[in-house]
Length: 128
Image 1 (tube, rainbow, N blue to C red):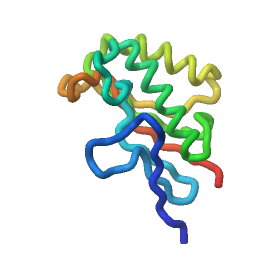
Image 2 (cartoon, rainbow, N blue to C red):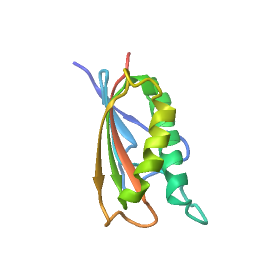
Image 3 (cartoon, helix red, strand yellow):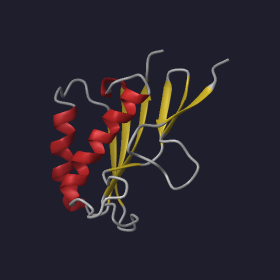
């Protein structure tokens, strides 16, 4: 029987006692991944948060023993849909092959906890 393992990576810490992600066997599911660096003196702009969020996704997959090629779905919440073009720009940079992109769903959430303007959750299948 597969054992659940917590996955964390340097630079990202939750205020609550939860890991960045959890893995059972090859299935990896993340908690919320944002684009705001911990203890940032000045929160980055919305477009920069999109870039940082995808960098954090990559760091998470690396910590779990995988790569972004292992992602099967990403759910994204934007504080304002005006950030969608920035999101798409970073999406194409991370997943340039239109024949090999994960599924994605984007939600608008004007109630995202400040200073966050974009967050996501990732589902991946990571080899052992």
